Length: 235
Image 1 (spheres, rainbow, N blue to C red):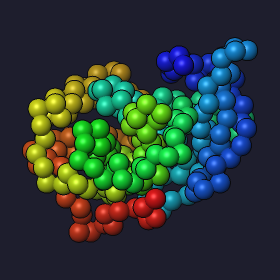
Image 2 (image 1 turned 60 degrees about the horizontal axis):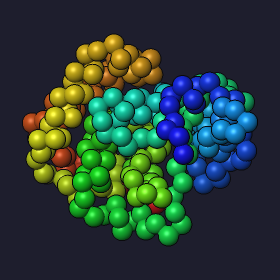
Image 3 (image 1 turned 135 degrees about the vertical axis):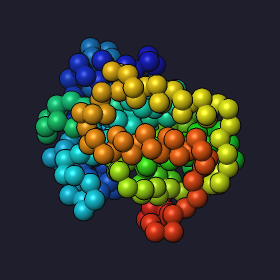
């Protein structure tokens, strides 16, 4: 399998083949065709299929998916499958590389372990203020590599972290994690982070910067006493 690039998902022909019926918003399965012998399986989430939420601006979820990918890729988290914002058969939306997960994979057991990749995902979620890290949004591919999906309800300016990954709460960051936060600060001051300004409000970008500084000082957060700590359903 060739390494998928942003340009591939932007330039290929997007064809919808079906719908994932368990998703709360329109989530479509399809392919991006690059040539007669080169196709990429993808998830396509058109803005037109987003249900209104009381706490997120209408039509903003697809852009947040892209912001999560860009941040993950920019500083070396490497947790979010390649994701772009582009037009498609049902209008503009997020298009993300599809990750095949083996049927025998016990995601719930793996996600509750104390392991480096899960810890990295917990830190990523605290940074982006992910309000929907369910077990079903944690993916292990055939090689065992960890990915996360469904980041449409993230980056809110108010603290709304909801996750099933609380096993690191209260722990201080190690040197690698502290280095990642410094990379985020540098990235946010560069032009390559302008994608955030396209899809997020100024207040949300400022809140992101604040969360990075707070994590540097306080380490992994504890569950909030004012907000549900775990998304429902958790799977």
